[in-house]
Length: 190
Image 1 (cartoon, rainbow, N blue to C red):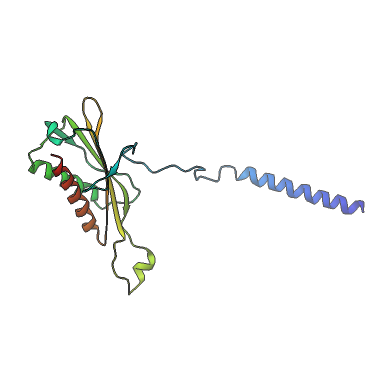
Image 2 (image 1 turned 180 degrees about the vertical axis):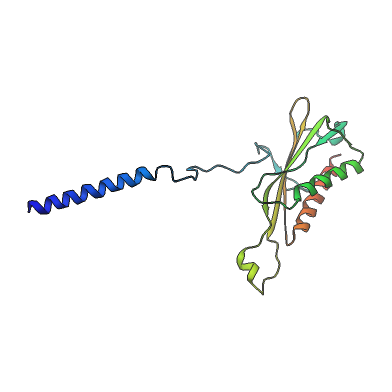
């Protein structure tokens, strides 16, 4: 009986020791974060944003008009997603530049207001099942969402925050839809 107990105790201690030893060797093996970190965004505070007519969500400082600022600086759009955006950021930036120039808004590197934009959500590929399905009909399953912030240069006060997105069956369609809606919105607030 004593031999059985000693073998059992030896086996138990050996297994415990091996478990502890394995735990020590695997100590730095987990490289994933142990907490949730939200994705990077341009807008840090969503307080006061409401649904807009031309855009999804908007917040304006009381009395905001584009003509209140003699010149505006438009910074190139950033891509804050991990997906290659296929020059979507550049197309949105160039589209806004063109609209501002056509509407006699003075663009300057040292403007009175600074407009920053970024692509924050992007889905440019269909699911695997939809790619191989011969009966798949194109639906609105591609997605683009942008955020814009307009700040005064001197005070750094935010005067306008916009979140807008579009869904469509082709990349060109969603880019043109987002750009058209942003232009329509800026046009109504000249």
